[in-house]
Length: 79
Image 1: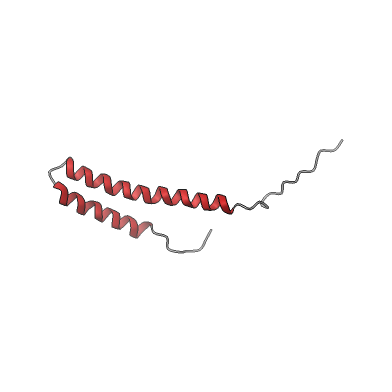
Image 2: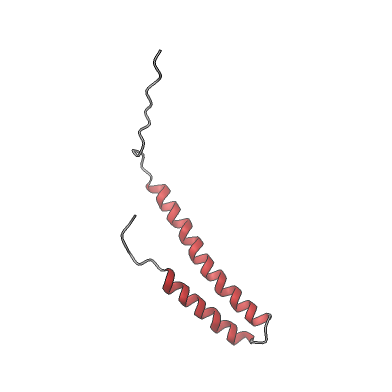
């Protein structure tokens, strides 16, 4: 007896929801990491060194601004 024919055809399924979920998770990870790095730098400089609040806040703001400038979407070609 011959095997059953499968209804599955590779590459025919709609994956738009999976792609949008992947992009959402990557964006949350990317921006969450930038915010966490800026917050940690601010708190470490404020509480663990003699630099104080102002130096910590300025450093955290610089890291946040650089992260936003370097990691924002540039609207390039989709892969």
